Length: 479
Image (cartoon, rainbow, N blue to C red):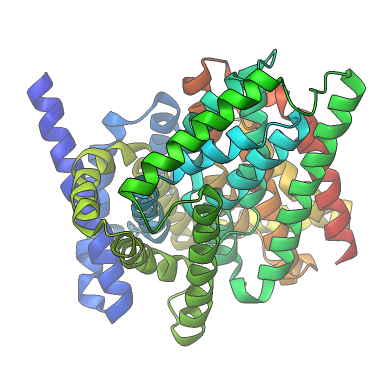
């Protein structure tokens, strides 16, 4: 059984990697000859992924595949055209496959240690600690997505535990989530933003500043809520926990800095490393915007193409080029096969969407949405869209899958709303689902790390999500 499992892992690594590389080459060079190969690789990827996926993913993937096949068979389809239906949403899988290369550079640059050192020096109060953690989480999430959670948790764990909070895991979970979730609202590296803009055909450059303001104000709101809760509970910590404790932390930080000064003479101060991350993010966004304007590849594909070379150049700047290539090879061999859930659900969702279009049944779905829109009015309908996304999340559906299906069923022009408003509503729904969706990857990862149920974690974050929804509703009504 172990041998079979190992061969299956190797097969997934090869097929997933080939699918991503060939898809990106196909998009860059517009090589239509590669289309059949992409479809074949997608089918093989699905067949390899489903056995290695979670139960929820198996159920939804098989449901989409069986239903989609039945729909096109009702319409009538030959094997060649049936083959071509597969392969949609590989653009999103390419993004998820390429972004971890940036996390490799962060690891090699020991940026996680810098985060811990910064927190060790800034323990004046619980609220200031919360602001610092959520701010760094907001920053890292903009380029690392889900990889931010374990990096942040293990980076802050030691510093937070030394303070002696009553509910350490709850505090760390909320602080990280408060920054992570709202970064989903604006980052070009966010799957929620990527799929919402791709399906609504809204250029990221035209809506970026609005999404960024929503994300930033969402972060400020989280700070305000946490401060109010702390003030009401009366559990605020003293400015400095204790002289002895402060001295210990200072000595630890000084010792760490002295040691790092020997090994990394050009990168000494922790705050300087945080500014390096800010600089990298600004450069990535600038290059992304520039290339998106020159190419017709779209936000997601452009970001996917940029991820590896940017990560490698960053590693070279840190004098870690050889180590980066070794870690990248290890990632492809050992970590890429772990994307079975994503390949199974996204490729089967893409197939189902294409099957709906081919069979013509998508018109019935669109008509149902139109009738619902006319019944409640365009403004209220727009406010309900994020709740529908969240509802799908509570049913076990990935928020990106929900956005894909919803966007397919909605015609902004016919609904009397702008595509930009619809995109913002869908992104807002993704933020809410990542915050409290009990089946989302976010809460499941936290559940594994802190050994708490996903519904319990969702309950911790419920108030923050409710306030964000009210804020989102105000934005949708005003802009």
